[in-house]
Length: 431
Image (cartoon, rainbow, N blue to C red):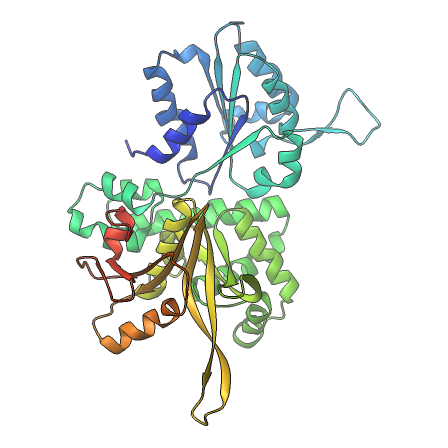
Protein backbone atom coordinates (compact mmCIF):
# COMPACT_ATOMS: atom_id res chain seq x y z
CA UNK A 1 0.00 0.00 0.00
CA UNK A 2 1.26 3.49 -0.90
CA UNK A 3 0.82 5.60 2.20
CA UNK A 4 -0.94 8.94 1.76
CA UNK A 5 -0.61 9.88 5.43
CA UNK A 6 -1.14 13.60 4.91
CA UNK A 7 -4.50 13.08 3.22
CA UNK A 8 -5.58 10.30 5.56
CA UNK A 9 -4.91 12.57 8.54
CA UNK A 10 -6.97 15.30 6.89
CA UNK A 11 -9.89 12.93 6.36
CA UNK A 12 -9.69 11.73 9.95
CA UNK A 13 -9.72 15.32 11.26
CA UNK A 14 -12.73 16.17 9.10
CA UNK A 15 -14.67 12.98 9.85
CA UNK A 16 -18.29 13.65 10.85
CA UNK A 17 -17.73 17.42 10.88
CA UNK A 18 -21.13 18.19 9.36
CA UNK A 19 -19.61 19.20 6.02
CA UNK A 20 -19.28 17.43 2.69
CA UNK A 21 -15.65 16.48 2.09
CA UNK A 22 -14.80 17.57 -1.49
CA UNK A 23 -11.70 15.65 -2.64
CA UNK A 24 -10.21 17.12 -5.80
CA UNK A 25 -7.21 16.45 -8.01
CA UNK A 26 -6.10 15.32 -11.44
CA UNK A 27 -7.57 12.01 -12.61
CA UNK A 28 -5.51 8.93 -11.66
CA UNK A 29 -3.63 10.74 -8.88
CA UNK A 30 -5.07 8.43 -6.21
CA UNK A 31 -8.32 10.01 -5.00
CA UNK A 32 -10.32 6.77 -5.35
CA UNK A 33 -7.55 4.75 -3.71
CA UNK A 34 -7.44 7.22 -0.84
CA UNK A 35 -11.15 6.82 -0.17
CA UNK A 36 -11.96 3.26 -1.19
CA UNK A 37 -8.81 1.63 0.19
CA UNK A 38 -6.87 3.73 2.69
CA UNK A 39 -9.74 5.55 4.39
CA UNK A 40 -12.04 2.51 4.13
CA UNK A 41 -9.47 0.41 6.00
CA UNK A 42 -9.09 3.13 8.61
CA UNK A 43 -12.87 3.17 9.19
CA UNK A 44 -12.83 -0.63 9.54
CA UNK A 45 -10.02 -0.31 12.09
CA UNK A 46 -12.13 1.97 14.31
CA UNK A 47 -15.15 -0.31 14.24
CA UNK A 48 -17.12 0.72 11.14
CA UNK A 49 -18.34 -2.35 9.26
CA UNK A 50 -18.62 -2.51 5.47
CA UNK A 51 -22.42 -2.36 5.53
CA UNK A 52 -22.13 1.24 6.73
CA UNK A 53 -19.69 2.32 4.03
CA UNK A 54 -21.50 3.12 0.76
CA UNK A 55 -19.17 3.42 -2.24
CA UNK A 56 -20.07 4.39 -5.82
CA UNK A 57 -17.50 4.97 -8.57
CA UNK A 58 -19.54 7.06 -10.97
CA UNK A 59 -16.99 6.83 -13.78
CA UNK A 60 -17.53 3.04 -13.99
CA UNK A 61 -19.92 1.97 -16.75
CA UNK A 62 -21.70 -0.39 -14.37
CA UNK A 63 -22.82 2.65 -12.40
CA UNK A 64 -24.10 4.69 -15.35
CA UNK A 65 -27.65 4.45 -14.00
CA UNK A 66 -26.66 6.41 -10.91
CA UNK A 67 -25.46 9.36 -12.99
CA UNK A 68 -29.10 10.40 -12.96
CA UNK A 69 -29.22 12.58 -9.82
CA UNK A 70 -32.74 11.54 -8.82
CA UNK A 71 -31.90 7.84 -9.18
CA UNK A 72 -28.65 8.35 -7.27
CA UNK A 73 -30.30 9.99 -4.27
CA UNK A 74 -33.00 7.35 -4.18
CA UNK A 75 -30.47 4.49 -4.42
CA UNK A 76 -28.35 5.75 -1.52
CA UNK A 77 -31.36 6.23 0.73
CA UNK A 78 -32.48 2.67 0.01
CA UNK A 79 -29.07 1.42 1.19
CA UNK A 80 -29.33 3.33 4.48
CA UNK A 81 -31.53 0.89 6.38
CA UNK A 82 -30.06 1.66 9.81
CA UNK A 83 -31.55 4.88 11.18
CA UNK A 84 -29.12 5.27 14.08
CA UNK A 85 -25.54 4.35 13.18
CA UNK A 86 -23.47 6.59 10.93
CA UNK A 87 -23.13 5.83 7.20
CA UNK A 88 -20.03 6.96 5.30
CA UNK A 89 -20.96 7.75 1.71
CA UNK A 90 -18.20 7.85 -0.93
CA UNK A 91 -19.21 9.22 -4.35
CA UNK A 92 -16.26 9.03 -6.73
CA UNK A 93 -16.06 11.39 -9.75
CA UNK A 94 -19.27 13.16 -8.74
CA UNK A 95 -19.05 15.51 -11.75
CA UNK A 96 -20.20 12.54 -13.86
CA UNK A 97 -23.71 13.04 -12.43
CA UNK A 98 -25.80 14.70 -15.11
CA UNK A 99 -27.57 18.05 -14.82
CA UNK A 100 -31.16 17.27 -15.88
CA UNK A 101 -34.42 19.24 -16.11
CA UNK A 102 -36.44 18.94 -12.91
CA UNK A 103 -39.06 16.30 -13.83
CA UNK A 104 -41.37 17.62 -11.12
CA UNK A 105 -41.40 21.14 -12.56
CA UNK A 106 -42.00 20.65 -16.31
CA UNK A 107 -41.93 23.77 -18.42
CA UNK A 108 -39.48 25.57 -16.11
CA UNK A 109 -35.74 26.19 -16.39
CA UNK A 110 -34.99 24.49 -13.06
CA UNK A 111 -32.47 21.64 -13.17
CA UNK A 112 -31.34 18.90 -10.80
CA UNK A 113 -27.69 17.85 -10.41
CA UNK A 114 -25.10 16.51 -8.02
CA UNK A 115 -25.29 19.53 -5.74
CA UNK A 116 -28.94 18.74 -5.03
CA UNK A 117 -28.07 15.12 -4.25
CA UNK A 118 -25.30 16.10 -1.85
CA UNK A 119 -27.40 18.76 -0.10
CA UNK A 120 -30.17 16.22 0.36
CA UNK A 121 -27.81 13.64 1.86
CA UNK A 122 -26.32 16.21 4.21
CA UNK A 123 -29.74 16.66 5.81
CA UNK A 124 -29.70 13.02 6.96
CA UNK A 125 -28.39 13.01 10.53
CA UNK A 126 -26.43 9.76 10.18
CA UNK A 127 -24.81 10.50 6.80
CA UNK A 128 -21.16 11.58 6.45
CA UNK A 129 -20.61 12.48 2.79
CA UNK A 130 -17.38 12.39 0.74
CA UNK A 131 -17.21 13.25 -2.97
CA UNK A 132 -14.31 13.35 -5.41
CA UNK A 133 -13.97 15.34 -8.61
CA UNK A 134 -11.37 15.83 -11.31
CA UNK A 135 -12.00 19.37 -12.45
CA UNK A 136 -12.06 22.71 -10.72
CA UNK A 137 -15.79 23.09 -11.29
CA UNK A 138 -15.88 21.32 -7.92
CA UNK A 139 -14.23 24.41 -6.41
CA UNK A 140 -16.11 27.14 -8.26
CA UNK A 141 -17.67 29.86 -6.15
CA UNK A 142 -21.09 28.86 -7.45
CA UNK A 143 -20.73 25.26 -6.24
CA UNK A 144 -19.33 26.25 -2.85
CA UNK A 145 -22.14 28.79 -2.50
CA UNK A 146 -24.69 26.11 -3.30
CA UNK A 147 -23.15 23.91 -0.62
CA UNK A 148 -24.03 26.82 1.70
CA UNK A 149 -20.61 27.04 3.25
CA UNK A 150 -20.58 23.34 4.07
CA UNK A 151 -18.05 22.19 1.47
CA UNK A 152 -14.63 21.24 2.87
CA UNK A 153 -11.92 20.76 0.20
CA UNK A 154 -9.08 18.26 0.29
CA UNK A 155 -6.77 18.69 -2.70
CA UNK A 156 -4.93 15.47 -3.60
CA UNK A 157 -1.76 15.70 -5.69
CA UNK A 158 0.28 13.03 -7.46
CA UNK A 159 2.81 11.40 -5.14
CA UNK A 160 5.26 13.78 -3.52
CA UNK A 161 8.88 12.67 -3.60
CA UNK A 162 8.72 11.57 0.04
CA UNK A 163 5.60 9.45 -0.65
CA UNK A 164 7.27 8.01 -3.74
CA UNK A 165 10.54 7.38 -1.87
CA UNK A 166 8.83 5.52 0.96
CA UNK A 167 7.01 3.24 -1.50
CA UNK A 168 9.96 2.74 -3.87
CA UNK A 169 11.16 -0.87 -3.79
CA UNK A 170 14.36 -0.44 -5.81
CA UNK A 171 17.73 0.92 -4.72
CA UNK A 172 16.94 4.17 -2.88
CA UNK A 173 19.88 5.80 -4.65
CA UNK A 174 17.91 5.46 -7.89
CA UNK A 175 14.68 6.93 -6.50
CA UNK A 176 15.44 10.55 -7.46
CA UNK A 177 16.29 9.71 -11.07
CA UNK A 178 13.16 7.57 -11.32
CA UNK A 179 10.95 10.33 -9.90
CA UNK A 180 12.74 12.99 -11.95
CA UNK A 181 11.93 11.01 -15.10
CA UNK A 182 8.51 9.42 -14.51
CA UNK A 183 6.95 11.58 -11.83
CA UNK A 184 4.47 10.59 -9.16
CA UNK A 185 1.34 9.18 -10.79
CA UNK A 186 0.77 6.18 -8.47
CA UNK A 187 0.20 3.48 -11.10
CA UNK A 188 3.50 4.34 -12.81
CA UNK A 189 5.19 2.55 -9.92
CA UNK A 190 3.57 -0.73 -11.01
CA UNK A 191 5.08 -0.55 -14.49
CA UNK A 192 8.39 -2.41 -14.88
CA UNK A 193 10.06 -1.04 -18.01
CA UNK A 194 10.65 2.38 -19.53
CA UNK A 195 8.38 1.44 -22.44
CA UNK A 196 5.54 0.49 -20.10
CA UNK A 197 5.88 3.63 -18.01
CA UNK A 198 6.07 5.88 -21.06
CA UNK A 199 3.05 4.20 -22.65
CA UNK A 200 1.01 4.54 -19.46
CA UNK A 201 1.76 8.27 -19.14
CA UNK A 202 1.06 8.94 -22.82
CA UNK A 203 -2.23 7.04 -22.59
CA UNK A 204 -3.27 9.25 -19.68
CA UNK A 205 -2.94 12.24 -21.97
CA UNK A 206 -4.57 10.74 -25.03
CA UNK A 207 -7.34 8.64 -23.51
CA UNK A 208 -8.15 10.47 -20.27
CA UNK A 209 -7.13 14.12 -20.00
CA UNK A 210 -7.52 15.37 -23.56
CA UNK A 211 -10.69 13.37 -24.14
CA UNK A 212 -12.17 14.70 -20.89
CA UNK A 213 -11.47 18.30 -21.88
CA UNK A 214 -12.71 17.84 -25.43
CA UNK A 215 -15.91 16.15 -24.28
CA UNK A 216 -16.63 18.56 -21.44
CA UNK A 217 -15.94 21.67 -23.52
CA UNK A 218 -17.29 20.32 -26.86
CA UNK A 219 -14.14 21.30 -28.77
CA UNK A 220 -13.33 18.20 -30.80
CA UNK A 221 -12.32 20.47 -33.67
CA UNK A 222 -9.50 21.88 -31.55
CA UNK A 223 -7.75 18.66 -30.52
CA UNK A 224 -4.66 19.30 -32.63
CA UNK A 225 -4.36 22.83 -31.23
CA UNK A 226 -4.65 21.53 -27.66
CA UNK A 227 -1.93 18.98 -28.36
CA UNK A 228 0.35 21.58 -29.93
CA UNK A 229 -0.23 23.95 -27.00
CA UNK A 230 0.68 21.19 -24.53
CA UNK A 231 3.88 20.55 -26.47
CA UNK A 232 4.83 24.22 -26.38
CA UNK A 233 4.12 24.54 -22.65
CA UNK A 234 6.01 21.30 -21.98
CA UNK A 235 9.06 22.62 -23.82
CA UNK A 236 9.03 25.93 -21.96
CA UNK A 237 8.08 24.79 -18.46
CA UNK A 238 9.42 27.25 -15.91
CA UNK A 239 9.91 29.99 -18.51
CA UNK A 240 8.10 33.31 -18.45
CA UNK A 241 5.37 33.44 -21.03
CA UNK A 242 1.80 34.63 -21.67
CA UNK A 243 -1.03 33.91 -24.11
CA UNK A 244 0.11 36.62 -26.53
CA UNK A 245 3.64 35.24 -26.65
CA UNK A 246 2.24 31.74 -27.19
CA UNK A 247 -0.03 33.04 -29.94
CA UNK A 248 3.02 34.52 -31.66
CA UNK A 249 4.82 31.17 -31.30
CA UNK A 250 1.95 29.43 -33.10
CA UNK A 251 2.13 32.02 -35.87
CA UNK A 252 5.89 31.82 -36.37
CA UNK A 253 6.56 28.11 -35.72
CA UNK A 254 3.28 26.34 -36.46
CA UNK A 255 2.13 28.82 -39.12
CA UNK A 256 -1.25 28.89 -37.38
CA UNK A 257 -3.34 31.91 -36.45
CA UNK A 258 -4.64 31.36 -32.91
CA UNK A 259 -5.73 34.43 -30.95
CA UNK A 260 -4.30 35.06 -27.51
CA UNK A 261 -7.86 34.93 -26.10
CA UNK A 262 -8.25 31.41 -27.46
CA UNK A 263 -4.86 30.40 -26.06
CA UNK A 264 -5.83 31.79 -22.65
CA UNK A 265 -9.10 29.85 -22.74
CA UNK A 266 -7.36 26.58 -23.60
CA UNK A 267 -4.77 27.10 -20.87
CA UNK A 268 -7.62 27.58 -18.41
CA UNK A 269 -9.03 24.23 -19.56
CA UNK A 270 -5.74 22.53 -18.61
CA UNK A 271 -5.71 24.33 -15.25
CA UNK A 272 -9.35 23.34 -14.72
CA UNK A 273 -8.37 19.69 -15.21
CA UNK A 274 -5.46 20.09 -12.74
CA UNK A 275 -2.92 19.33 -15.48
CA UNK A 276 -1.23 22.71 -15.19
CA UNK A 277 -0.66 25.26 -12.45
CA UNK A 278 -0.16 28.97 -13.05
CA UNK A 279 2.37 30.97 -11.01
CA UNK A 280 1.96 34.74 -10.91
CA UNK A 281 4.83 37.20 -10.50
CA UNK A 282 5.08 39.08 -7.21
CA UNK A 283 7.10 42.23 -6.52
CA UNK A 284 8.68 41.46 -3.13
CA UNK A 285 9.65 45.02 -2.23
CA UNK A 286 6.57 46.65 -3.71
CA UNK A 287 4.35 43.95 -2.21
CA UNK A 288 2.17 43.73 -5.27
CA UNK A 289 1.41 41.36 -8.10
CA UNK A 290 2.77 42.12 -11.53
CA UNK A 291 0.77 41.20 -14.60
CA UNK A 292 1.95 39.14 -17.53
CA UNK A 293 4.25 37.31 -18.18
CA UNK A 294 3.91 34.39 -15.78
CA UNK A 295 4.95 30.74 -15.50
CA UNK A 296 3.17 27.42 -16.00
CA UNK A 297 4.10 24.17 -14.28
CA UNK A 298 2.83 20.62 -14.71
CA UNK A 299 1.09 19.01 -11.74
CA UNK A 300 3.19 15.91 -12.49
CA UNK A 301 6.63 16.09 -14.10
CA UNK A 302 6.31 12.58 -15.57
CA UNK A 303 3.33 13.73 -17.63
CA UNK A 304 5.39 16.63 -18.94
CA UNK A 305 8.33 14.38 -19.82
CA UNK A 306 6.09 11.84 -21.55
CA UNK A 307 4.47 14.61 -23.58
CA UNK A 308 7.91 15.30 -25.06
CA UNK A 309 8.78 11.60 -25.43
CA UNK A 310 11.46 12.11 -22.74
CA UNK A 311 13.58 14.14 -25.17
CA UNK A 312 14.01 17.42 -23.29
CA UNK A 313 15.34 16.48 -19.86
CA UNK A 314 16.73 19.85 -18.76
CA UNK A 315 17.58 19.27 -15.13
CA UNK A 316 17.15 22.89 -14.07
CA UNK A 317 13.59 23.20 -15.42
CA UNK A 318 12.52 19.79 -14.13
CA UNK A 319 13.95 20.52 -10.67
CA UNK A 320 12.13 23.84 -10.62
CA UNK A 321 8.81 22.16 -11.50
CA UNK A 322 9.30 19.51 -8.81
CA UNK A 323 10.13 22.11 -6.14
CA UNK A 324 7.04 24.10 -7.12
CA UNK A 325 4.85 20.99 -6.71
CA UNK A 326 6.50 20.17 -3.38
CA UNK A 327 5.72 23.61 -2.00
CA UNK A 328 2.09 23.24 -3.07
CA UNK A 329 2.02 19.80 -1.45
CA UNK A 330 3.17 21.48 1.77
CA UNK A 331 0.18 23.85 1.47
CA UNK A 332 2.11 26.95 0.49
CA UNK A 333 0.73 29.45 -1.98
CA UNK A 334 3.54 29.91 -4.48
CA UNK A 335 4.49 32.90 -6.63
CA UNK A 336 7.45 33.82 -8.80
CA UNK A 337 9.33 36.61 -7.03
CA UNK A 338 10.74 39.83 -8.44
CA UNK A 339 13.18 42.15 -6.65
CA UNK A 340 13.73 45.58 -8.18
CA UNK A 341 16.81 47.63 -7.37
CA UNK A 342 18.63 50.77 -8.54
CA UNK A 343 22.22 50.73 -9.73
CA UNK A 344 24.55 52.48 -12.17
CA UNK A 345 25.27 50.98 -15.57
CA UNK A 346 28.57 51.01 -17.49
CA UNK A 347 27.92 54.65 -18.49
CA UNK A 348 27.41 55.55 -14.79
CA UNK A 349 23.73 56.26 -15.39
CA UNK A 350 21.18 55.23 -12.78
CA UNK A 351 19.01 52.39 -14.01
CA UNK A 352 16.37 50.16 -12.41
CA UNK A 353 16.70 46.41 -12.86
CA UNK A 354 14.82 43.30 -11.83
CA UNK A 355 16.14 40.09 -10.34
CA UNK A 356 14.07 36.92 -10.18
CA UNK A 357 13.45 34.74 -7.15
CA UNK A 358 12.32 31.34 -8.31
CA UNK A 359 9.65 31.04 -5.61
CA UNK A 360 8.04 33.11 -2.90
CA UNK A 361 6.05 30.65 -0.79
CA UNK A 362 3.52 31.67 1.87
CA UNK A 363 1.64 29.56 4.41
CA UNK A 364 0.04 31.72 7.08
CA UNK A 365 2.82 33.48 8.97
CA UNK A 366 5.50 31.30 7.37
CA UNK A 367 7.29 32.53 4.26
CA UNK A 368 10.11 31.03 2.19
CA UNK A 369 12.25 32.49 -0.56
CA UNK A 370 13.71 29.71 -2.71
CA UNK A 371 16.20 29.53 -5.55
CA UNK A 372 16.65 26.33 -7.55
CA UNK A 373 20.18 25.76 -8.84
CA UNK A 374 22.00 22.81 -10.35
CA UNK A 375 25.12 23.64 -8.34
CA UNK A 376 26.93 26.49 -6.60
CA UNK A 377 30.44 25.03 -6.69
CA UNK A 378 31.73 28.04 -8.62
CA UNK A 379 31.83 31.16 -6.44
CA UNK A 380 30.73 33.47 -9.23
CA UNK A 381 27.78 31.19 -9.98
CA UNK A 382 26.85 31.14 -6.29
CA UNK A 383 26.87 34.95 -6.12
CA UNK A 384 24.59 35.14 -9.14
CA UNK A 385 22.13 32.68 -7.59
CA UNK A 386 21.87 34.54 -4.28
CA UNK A 387 22.00 38.11 -5.63
CA UNK A 388 18.23 38.46 -5.49
CA UNK A 389 17.96 36.82 -2.06
CA UNK A 390 20.53 39.19 -0.56
CA UNK A 391 18.43 42.17 -1.64
CA UNK A 392 15.45 41.07 0.49
CA UNK A 393 15.55 42.83 3.83
CA UNK A 394 13.14 40.77 5.89
CA UNK A 395 14.01 37.87 8.23
CA UNK A 396 12.14 35.04 6.49
CA UNK A 397 14.08 31.95 5.43
CA UNK A 398 16.09 32.13 2.23
CA UNK A 399 17.00 28.77 0.71
CA UNK A 400 19.03 27.60 -2.27
CA UNK A 401 18.09 24.07 -3.36
CA UNK A 402 20.78 22.39 -5.47
CA UNK A 403 20.98 19.09 -7.27
CA UNK A 404 24.01 17.72 -5.42
CA UNK A 405 23.70 15.68 -2.25
CA UNK A 406 25.48 18.06 0.12
CA UNK A 407 25.67 18.57 3.85
CA UNK A 408 23.31 21.54 4.40
CA UNK A 409 25.00 24.79 5.42
CA UNK A 410 24.39 28.52 5.95
CA UNK A 411 26.54 31.24 4.41
CA UNK A 412 27.49 34.50 6.11
CA UNK A 413 24.27 36.15 4.92
CA UNK A 414 22.13 33.47 6.56
CA UNK A 415 21.18 31.87 3.24
CA UNK A 416 20.67 28.13 3.57
CA UNK A 417 21.97 25.60 1.01
CA UNK A 418 20.50 22.10 0.77
CA UNK A 419 20.46 19.24 -1.75
CA UNK A 420 17.23 18.52 -3.60
CA UNK A 421 16.64 15.07 -2.09
CA UNK A 422 17.08 16.25 1.49
CA UNK A 423 14.80 19.20 0.81
CA UNK A 424 12.06 17.03 -0.69
CA UNK A 425 12.32 14.49 2.12
CA UNK A 426 11.96 17.26 4.69
CA UNK A 427 15.16 16.31 6.49
CA UNK A 428 16.29 19.89 6.99
CA UNK A 429 14.31 23.11 7.30
CA UNK A 430 17.00 25.78 7.44
CA UNK A 431 15.53 27.35 10.56
